[in-house]
Image 1: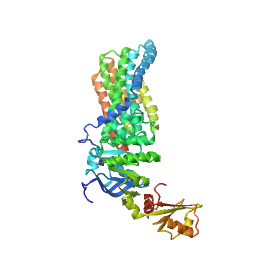
Image 2: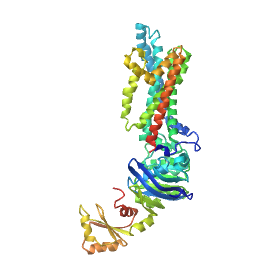
Image 3: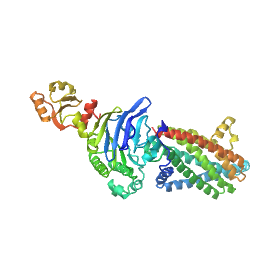
Image 4: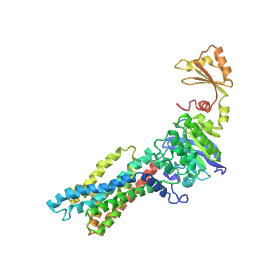
Amino acid sequence: MTGPDPEYLLHATGLTKSFGTFTAVDGIDFAVQRGESFGFLGPNGAGKSSTMKMVGCVSPATGGVLRVFGQDPATHGPQIRARLGVVPQKDTLDEELSVEVRVRTTELLEFAQLTDRAGSTVEPLSGGMKRRLTIARSLISRPEILLLDEPTTGLDPQARHVLWDRLFRLKRSGVTLVLTTHYMDEAEQLCDRLVVMDHGKIVAQGSPRSLIAEFSTKEVLELRFDTDDHSQQAGAIAGIGERIEVLPDRLLVYTQDGDVAAAEVHQRGVRPLSALVRRSTLEDVFLHLTGRTLID
Amino acid sequence: MSASVSTSTSGAAPAAWRSVFGSWLTAYKRTWRGSIFGRFLSPLMFLLSLGLGLGSLVNKSSGGVDGVPYLQFVVPGIVAAQSMWVAMGESTYPVMGAIRWNGKYYAMLATPVGINDVLFGHLLYVAMQVTGATAIFIAVAALFGSFTSWWVLLCLPVTILTGMAFAVPVFAFSARQETDSGFNILFRFIMTPLFLFSGIFFPVSQLPGFLRPVAWVMPLWHGVQANRSLALGSPDFAAIAAHAAYLLAVIAVSAWLARRAFTKRLVV
């Protein structure tokens, strides 16, 4: 086990969290540099939130070494927390207070695009507004690291894009972002680098692009058939592309050229209900690594 | 397990409990008008029903209790009982809410604030509520001639102790509850019997022998006895000191329990 490296804001080796006999985080290693945007990608129950709570110094590690700003959460919890901003999975806002009372500075309300709602109580705000208010609150202390646990879960697409835009601005202003997500599009949008977690372990790490290059093909051909069991159709297209994944509702053909693969399917006389060619995403990386989709 | 996340605040932010107290105060600023109105209304209702209504009957038929007019007998006890109600109200739903409903404690713990600050800051706010309610009650009751001695002013600190001897253990209880159904049991099977059988309306010596020790063990009886002794103007200070010491002991033991319950619930 190596000692803390001062180059990193966040450094973990063999980090473990157990609840009784259940191991939520199973000896993971990661390191985050200043100014980076770092993500934990994985399905529900992968250990992302447990990891975030340990980093946030509100949950003690069961094993391993964790250093935040080079300090040990076990001995310097308050000092570390003073330099962190935390956006928890569930908004912890007092809904009866006004927006203004929660976040005093006009600068932050402007940033959160809530200036015209400053006098309103929190309760009637939309999900996206509450989320932005939670982020504004987490920024009051000018944190060096912002921890975001599933920042856009439960928001509609437009609200998510507004939020991503705000987070992107924060990153440009020098704030280090550490986030968890089970959305691959979010990870691709926001993360310079990420780790893929499954069952408490890190199964892969790198930039979104390098992960896709390493674990998937350039393109994916998605085929849907009029059947209850797509595995029955897999035999008919065997050998096309580099690899075939069977999902309950479709077949995925991994290939460098989706159009060529589609033509080949047609040539064999196979007639799917629909055929769609798309680029590989982190979802495909995850599927390949774990055999499962991110969102069940 | 709890020991390995540092919850002390030494060096980081001196007296972080101040921010916790301030946060509860900020929330209270929105509702204080209604709350103060209720604080005035409650003594008025008791003075009318027990002092003028029941009191005149008791005085007529038996000349008060041990020669003391019923109003002067009963009001010091009600002062103690009210601190129990205020303390219970402030340490049940608000504590559960801050853990389960709005996550207020978790939001606090994400900052340099630690478990001790969360607990102490919130308890201080409860103490403030008990103090305000008691001061108003004593002032209103004094206008109605409920007290015969200036010693009644010492009822304020005694009553704060009484209230906190309920608030602190109930903090420990509330932090361990999964749902709010336990509160109904607390109100129905603890608070109401204590109100009726702690020597407020009649001396505990009237109770059947096997029930008296129950009254003696509970904090309310101690508050009632000390208050009455002060308000009637012939305080037995040795007895009052013993009552206060008992209340302090209850607070100290349950503070340890509350610290454990909060850590178990909030630091996982």
